[in-house]
Length: 97
Image (cartoon, rainbow, N blue to C red):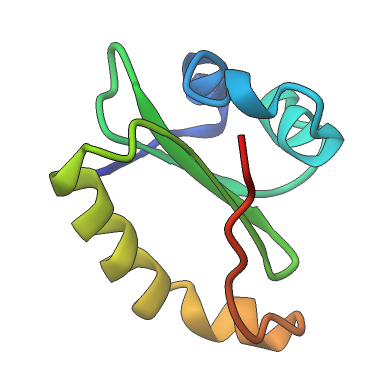
């Protein structure tokens, strides 16, 4: 299960995105400077999070969280897929950490 955070809650996901702290797009979304969505596995203490901007999807957190992985799959193949494709998204790449 995942929860979409309201923009004023985006900072709650900062810990889950810690491995990507170098990524300026993620930080800009969290700070509210770049429009985006943030979905997390827990509203109070997220360990996994997803955000996207213009077809780029950023996913970070515990890869063992099966419920979050399933909800991410639903998010990416459902409500946001058309938007991702409209911004040129054609596939996914796995980043090494």
